[in-house]
Amino acid sequence: MDWTLEVVVVPVSDIDRSKHFYSEQLGFVVDHDTTFSEDTRVVQLTPPGSGCSIVMGKGIVKGEPGSLKGVQLVVSDLEKARAQLLERGVEAGEIVRMNDKDGGSFVFFDDPDGNSWAVQEIKARATGGEWK
Image (cartoon, rainbow, N blue to C red; front, side):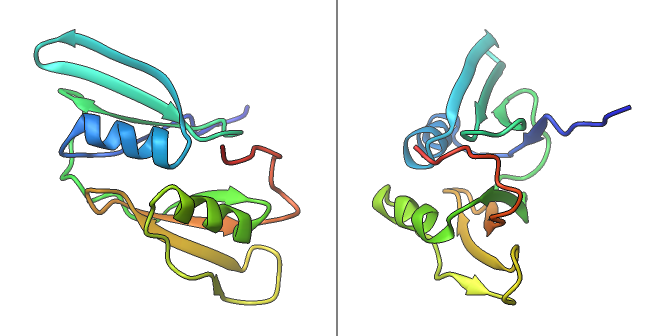
């Protein structure tokens, strides 16, 4: 039996600002933005090439905005990914090379609420999804 990770919930303070950051600055695809009632809204976005989405919203998310730490995205070309982040106005850090092995290089950034992300270069495992 496969156990697949499909959704990571991201606690945010401003849904529209966060939707813009993830879709326009990071290039995530907006799967849906659904308002069920005045108190319930769900926005789901998926990174290009990923089988796992993120969800943010009102009335569904527990947790303090900015409390998500350590989620990793994987790319095949870290230099290209960092350049795209910078071009889109994302404050991405310098490339950190922890070792010379595949998988040992990272770039870190935060969303507008302080949720922390890592971009890891794994050339052997990257699925071919490209940042748009």
